[in-house]
Image (cartoon, rainbow, N blue to C red; front, side, top):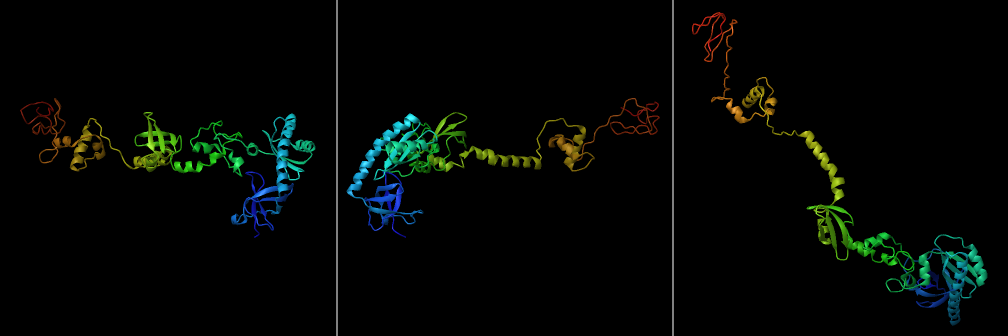
Length: 398
């Protein structure tokens, strides 16, 4: 691989890698390189031994024509002054034809025969007429290109809101990709007038510290995130990445709580959890477990209800472990307690006999009539044996 050096033709412009040829060049040497649009004067910014491995242009490599002489440097200074004067003339001409156009830059080669002009406009415009008419006005072979507002600010230079020279016109060679999300990550207000540069676009310096802010914030919950805490639900209302403080507003009391970021990191996911974790992930599992418990287990609830004779008899049988032809489950559901069951048994554990009362004035129907003492009445039902009571079919004695 041949040696290459990095050469810059304009301040804070892109670096062009060229072959030094037979010259031993060092950083700061002024050279002249023949380009497609004439000879250009530049200076070495990267020596041959400073080029990183793998850095080699894919296209054709320009070769340094010569080391710049005093005459070349004088011609370069003169062409810059002439280009600055002609830039004003080009702006006046463009404004009379199309007021939307703003000339960004104008550069000439060493001979002053070829030039490059750039301009900006709110939208894409046709500029072939400008190229033809300005070439006739300035008496040069002119190449016109439309660029963005950032390129115009880079070519014009100036002082930004920080009080220092524009980064793009001093040391930046490429424009970084900027988004409004970078401002939000750095707790900056999304106000375009406060986060925009002289070019009217978002500040390039928003990309300088955004990685540090994101590292400080780490895995903290995002602004506006809802979380669940041991004392209730809350909402994240602010995060101070530099002070490492998180502020929460409780839903129940509207109280604002300041919590150190390190303490929140330790509790996040355990005591303090995202609200979506409970609703979307844990909620379906809890509902499914509840349905399974309801389908597999019978819930018995005590209730106060009067005990029917049938249920009471079944309860007695259930207490003794006997079957009397009554569903034991009915007795259990009837609410008969153990105290009532103990009252239904005698001292030997046998069920107490129920006292039966005879019918008054009934006529004998051929059956035996019994009294409270168990004395039998008339055998044939015509007369009674006890008490000498006569009658036709008189049952027993009261």
